[in-house]
Length: 395
Ligand SMILES: C[S@@+](CC[C@H](N)C(=O)[O-])C[C@H]1O[C@@H](n2cnc3c(N)ncnc32)[C@H](O)[C@@H]1O
Ligand SMILES: [Zn+2]
Image 1 (cartoon, rainbow, N blue to C red):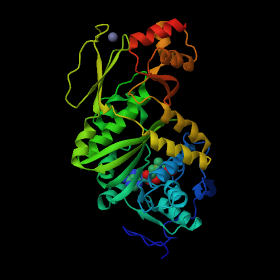
Image 2 (cartoon, helix red, strand yellow):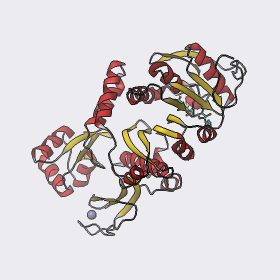
Image 3 (cartoon, protein in one colour):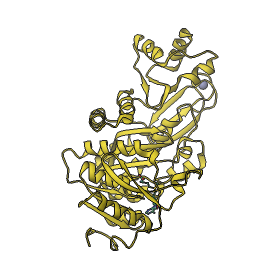
Image 4 (tube, rainbow, N blue to C red):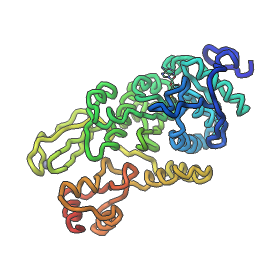
């Protein structure tokens, strides 16, 4: 047997592979991957085949390669688990392009068969493929780095991942509607928090997700620090550094809090803590406010880490990723943002260029920046009344 697993049930390389599956070999990064050929007439081609493969997620995988390369710079011996592996494309790229000892698991036999073929295709010696429930893999073993890239919500895997991960958790969520408040009840069930559909909905979703991760880690006396968090296409993605320490875990939870939103005048108020007092009426206009949370109110990114990821993306020619990471790195480190177009609509005026508004805010002494969440959005520490006066003045 060529690839000897350190854990779990294993069959010979050829036993799992389905020879009837139609496949092709593609290259992503510098890795070759045999993937199934999807039915292009299907409503969602990646799910039309027995092993999931979505070429649209290359950006997500490119950024993962760059981010993990940065994270392991001083510790190239860290172990990595691609817990929901499908074709193995994510784990194979980490093994091949970053060089980590990688475990790829999936509960589908055909997936594991394809992963095994792909390990051979790339002549990788540092890989293990396991056919097993991801939660069992994680509860039975610890890994330095765990990557959750599920179809839909990561919620069923968070408990086990937070127990198992020693240094870094990488989580994708494609259930953006529950997270951002469009499907509120599902959001409450999955993440134990009340989301709210607002003008800044993608940031609401990312912060609800990080908050759920922080609270789940805290149950294992672990703290987390977000290194990079973003919303793109139809998913959210976060990289959080994990540290096992009770004092740090207590400190981490202090970055949790609530947001109260006035849907009449747009005023939003943030309150740190898990047991908070919040005004039922908007201090500006007296309208009843609506509350979201608990959610993460701390930083979304670490600037030095973003600098490193950016350099890795440039070096590896991940051109699409460069623009996104630069926006993440340069956005003001404060929770929530404003949608310039929606703000103008509520004021009955037309919008100018977002950069023009940001320049004026800065000239008036406020912090202001673009945000990766949307091209027409901005972050600022200016009070809403001041923002409105400036926006009106630009009209
Ligand atoms: C969205 S796909 C993974 C895509 C892959 N990470 C990529 O980058 O292409 C989700 C995979 O998780 C597997 N899966 C779902 N639930 C699982 C579980 N409880 N244990 C193990 N695998 C599971 C599915 O069989 C499927 O292959
Ligand atoms: Zn109000």
